[in-house]
Amino acid sequence: MTTALLELSQISVSFDGFMALRDLNLSLQPGELRAVIGPNGAGKTTFLDVITGKLRPTAGDVLFKGQSLLNKPEHRIARLGIGRKFQSPRVFENLTVEENLALAVSHPKRPWPLLSSGLNAVERDRIAHLMGIVSLQTRAHQVAGSLSHGQKQWLEIAMLVGQSPDLLLVDEPVAGLTDEETDLTADLLKSLVGDHTVLVIDHDMEFIRRLESQVSVLHQGHVLCEGSMDQIQCDPRVIEVYLGRNEEVA
Ligand SMILES: Nc1ncnc2c1ncn2[C@@H]1O[C@H](COP(=O)(O)OP(=O)(O)OP(=O)(O)O)[C@@H](O)[C@H]1O
Image 1 (cartoon, rainbow, N blue to C red):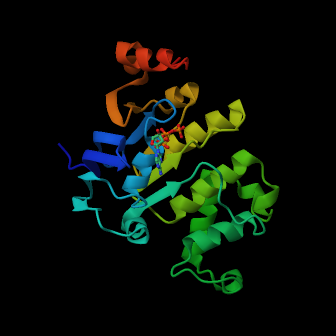
Image 2 (spheres, helix red, strand yellow):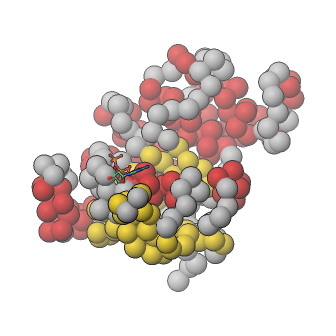
Image 3 (cartoon, rainbow, N blue to C red):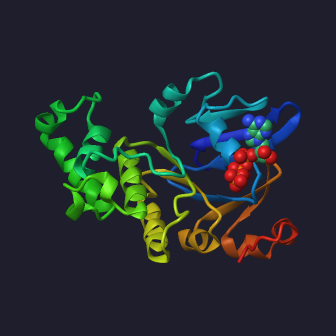
């Protein structure tokens, strides 16, 4: 079996005695796409916060490429190859699509206006490639602030991909998107798999189904079960958790 890219073992997080995560185990193989679902308060955000170093667990360990992430500051964890997409888009609204991507791909990070004249051929090709991935080529010179919500989400995903992370953590990317944008987002995330390992959190079950990935169900800070969407939908424990809270898993 391949060595896991990410391995969370026996992770617990206590907020003044309240266990937001409790003996959580989860591992991701390189190049995998994984969905994580769970009712409100299940611990999904806390789980991402632990991986990215925003929160230190009370117990347990997080290994990334075999190396413990505990005690590493957030910026070092990011540099090790973990990118996080937050729920609301974080793009530079006053810069164009191309300029946003230029900032993402330039090494080292160079301030504007150096970027406008200073991109090398490799960086320009990379930006063109990234715009292609998210179908924003025709918007290259449009300021990000004028894009639709979905297009901003895609731009930010492209910016993250531009930093070549091994692992992409994507938090509720389709909240507020149209059905068509939701489907396109699923296809986009699937297209990243292989080159990247992608973990997606969302509540939208149609979107999760379209990802065609393994699904981990979080409940009360613990992985309740894992399997394909068809498998978890039939699992009585999952039905109980969702029906018990009057939410649908269908
Ligand atoms: N800083 C904190 N102090 C105390 N309790 C917290 C803190 N952060 C989270 N919690 C609690 O921990 C539990 C898990 O929260 P978390 O935000 O991780 O859940 P979630 O699955 O992301 O929920 P949602 O789907 O609503 O975003 C919740 O009961 C929440 O109230």
